[in-house]
Every structure is written in C-alpha cells, then in structure tokens.
Length: 367
Image 1 (tube, rainbow, N blue to C red):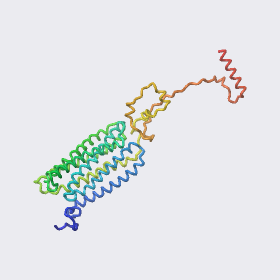
Image 2 (tube, helix red, strand yellow):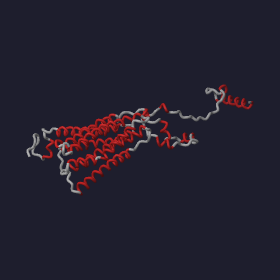
Image 3 (cartoon, rainbow, N blue to C red):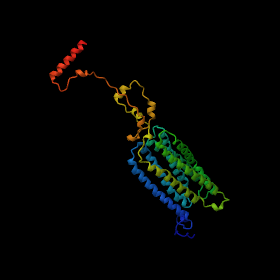
Image 4 (cartoon, rainbow, N blue to C red):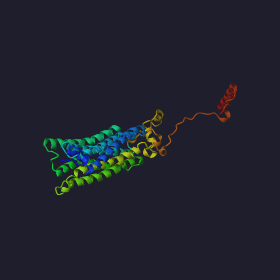
C-alpha cells in the first residue's frame, strides 16, 4: 500500500495523523495539542492562585476543579486514539477511557453543583475530603461498567472489536455511556436549583456549570444521533464517520469544558467575597461564646439546630452582613457616687478630704 502524501513509511493505522489529503486528522490533532497545552497552563495557574485565596470555601473546591482539568486533559489526549484507526490497541482504549474521563468531569461538576446548592442556601458546605470522595465514587461506577464490558464481552466471549459489525459496535459504545448520560441529567437539574437562594454571590458558579452542561448535552445529542445512523448498512458513504466524528466530539467538548467552566472559575477564584455571600456575623458567635456571655445567657436554651446549619465564614471581615447585626446587651453594675456638692476636690489636701468625709457622714446620720 502506497503511503499518502505527507506520510512516510509508517503503519497504515497512523495515516490520518499525517495525510494531507484528509486534513481532518491534522486539524483535530492541532486542536487537541492546543487543548493539552491550555489545560496544563490552567493547572499551573490554579496551583499558584489557590495559595492566594482567603475564602476557605473556595479553597475547598480547588481540588475538585484541578481534578476536572485533569479529566479534560485526558479527553484531549484520548482524541489521538480516535484519529488512529481502530485496532486491537485503540479499541479497548476507546471503549474504556471515553466514558471514564467524561464520568470524571461530570462527577466533579455534580459535586461542585451540590456544594454550591448548600452555599447559596447558607448551609454548611461539603469538606474538601468529602467532595473528593464523592467525585471519585461517582467515577468508580463508570470504571466498573467499562471494565466488565471488556472482560465479559471481549475477553470471555472472544469478540474482536475490530471485526465486530459497525452498527453493533456503535450501539455497544452508546450503551456503555448510559451512566454518563445519567450524570449529565442529574448535574443539569442540580445546577438549575443553584440559582435559587438568598446568598447571590455563589450563584454565578452554578451558572458556569449550567452553561457547560447545556453545551455538552447539545454536543452529545448530535454525535450520538449521527453515530447511531452512520452504522446503517444503507449509508455506505458514511463508513468512516466514526473516526472523525468521535475525535471532533472530544475536542469540541474539551474546549467547552475549558472555556465555559475552567476559565471563568479561575477568574473568580481570587475575587474577594462580598457581604451578601454569607449569613450575618451574629450567627457565627454561637460557637465562640465567652464565659461572661454564657453566664449572661444561661437562662436561654441554645439553638443547636440553627448553629449546625450555619455556614463557616472566612476570616475576611468584608464577607459579613453588618446591616443584620443586633447590638449585644451590656450588663453594668451601678456604683454609688457622692453628691456633686460633697465630692472632695482632688487637689485638696489630705486633711481637707478627711474633714469633707466627716461632714458627709454627719449629714447622712441626720437624714
């Protein structure tokens, strides 16, 4: 077989990487490489800017956002497995990593949306460890699904993905992504509720997630519909549509992740919080009472349920809502004072002060 223009003496499976006659491979390869470089730069920027964040709640979400960018980096890298022709090495890679990487990204978005939903309502947010456990746990389900398909269908039954019929292979590919579609729907529904809440400063994060999911759903609906119809034997002209279609879907969705979510999130990472982002400061003082305040308020039952629902505020005083603060009562013990006419002058001598006190004592006895 004669190599196409632009390619040397290489394996025919890699012709799409260098064939100038079918430039879609070179174009997608360039876009994927640019996406990989951008993802690495965003990773570096997140690591640097995370040290400047004063808001503890924003700091807790940084690992989830870093994990999301790592998933996006894997999506751009997986594009090359779809540019190269389907073979015994690229086949399992496509079937396993496609769903796993997207499940990782959507799991991070789902966890972030759930955390934002608590913040906009003034509730205690998830901890950093809890968010990581949730994101990894959601992704683990897709890993189990993909590995079971490869072990049971491919290894045990001896089915070769290359020799499998195109229509059946496309149906199996979409079927493996059912769980990812469920994650997309759940994240979209949850991100809609993040726009409802009294603390408006966190709503913009929910808007980033909602816009990202809206574009992703449109992309997935387009490539799934084309992929399922391209396997029809009647459409012989679309016999090669699986290679450029899937690689293009990966590149476009990867750039949607970066431009619609990662870049806006990094822009708001170091923005100082406003007074409307958190509950009033007086709700925080329930857990930091002094012995004097305990003695003064010992007749009142503590509101434990309300204290558990209060969000942990950062140390920045600009995040409080001073307009809702109530002045604390001041308990003072009155002290006896002398009559102004009987007060001894500080400049008087010791004998004069003593005589003034004697006069005052005599007056009190006559009264």
